[in-house]
Amino acid sequence: MPTLEELREQVDRRKEMCAQVKQLVVDRLDVPVEPQWITDDQPLFGRGLELDSVDALELVVGLEYDFAVSVTDDQLDVFGSVARLAEHIEAEL
Amino acid sequence: MVYISPLAGAYPDSVTTEIVASAEVPWVFSSVEEEYTALRQRRALFDFSHLGRIKISGRGALDFLQEQVARDITYLFPEKSLTSLMLDEEGRPFDVVVVYKVQGGYILETSVGHGAATLERLRAAAPDEVEVTDLSEELAVVGIEGPFAWEVLGRLYEPQLTGLPYQGVATIEWEGEEVRVSRTGFTGEYGYKLYLPVAAASKAWHLMLEETPPAGYAALETAMLEMRQPMLHREVGPEDNVVRCGLNWMVELDKEDYIGREALGEQAESEPDYLTVGFTAPADLDIATGSTVIAGGELEIGTVAHTVHSPTLHARIGLARTKAEWTTFGLELEVQAPDGARAPIRTVAAPFLIPFSWSVPIL
Image (cartoon, rainbow over all chains, first blue to last red):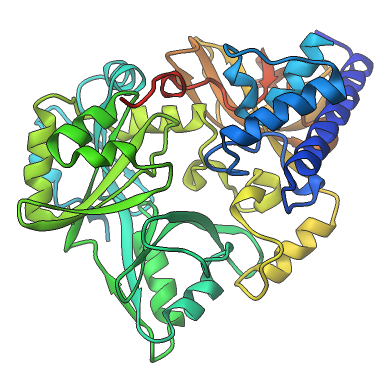
């Protein structure tokens, strides 16, 4: 079981990553919402931010540009939420 | 008074029921596992008549409804629905509603078992020029969800229904009756609701039953939690608000003048004290609601709000409300039962799983 200090470091890193993903979504897709109002678990497609497949392509480009992280066709799950995207970036970095 | 569906007489004798809010719902028809598997792998039939349905009509219908719901319905057209929270004056979630634009007004679909409470609130607030009509005895709601739900819909009713976009609405004629079909499912799979008069609903139920097994609310609630679809009756405690529950996406801050808007603004401007996160735990672990969440073996950071068993993940999954500074995915934590026993959990990013429908094209 990780110590409080180890957990604190994980929390800080993941919150920062989620904040960057929210900023990316808002900037790249012109979403009319303050980034901090988007929740980590907010759905991105369909319900939630109501993004579509064109937005998904734009996000893929943004992830490559901002994080040097790619998303392949079989990794649809990364678009499940902001936190899913952050999790993917963390795993790829 | 407990609401009983007009389709309840059509259920097989094997059904077990539960009370959810003010409705008696079919909980399990055969077995939760079988019904869940049908839903996630092929399709399952639901009686969604336990969702309240209320018509709001009259000259002032739009303005009245705008005061009631937390998202803007100005540009809502008949071919598209909109999901929104209704808040109370303190900015707490009151109901999750789906709004449909119809001839002469709107239909408001409430969450399960919440029809009576929402109807009472609307009737109490409606001005003279607005008519609030309860449709729950006149119309029934049959649902079908699953990666191949669209097949049945296209074949039995109208081929063009398979092309219905998410949250789309179409009106067709079937058996001489007007049927409103919406793609507004709960489980992340292709999901549809059919609004139709009670007699026609009974025919539709039996027709669809020939090739689609019925599923109860036990399987439905499992699938909903897997997708983090809000279930207020399970997730929202007396101290909770929109931000704590992570329901920000179901309200609009740039919309003004609706019930709870002022209190919501205060939530938005303050640092949150608690937030919600999903977690997984060993499948055989029975975690009581209210169990304490512990970090680093020593620090109490929150409590468990709700859990279910996920057959797909072979795990117990749940939601915890934890101090905001500790709320994120991927943390190894513990839960402590009231008797002091501790067990490991891991926080996870939502949704818990990706539905099969995401990889099944509609043909």
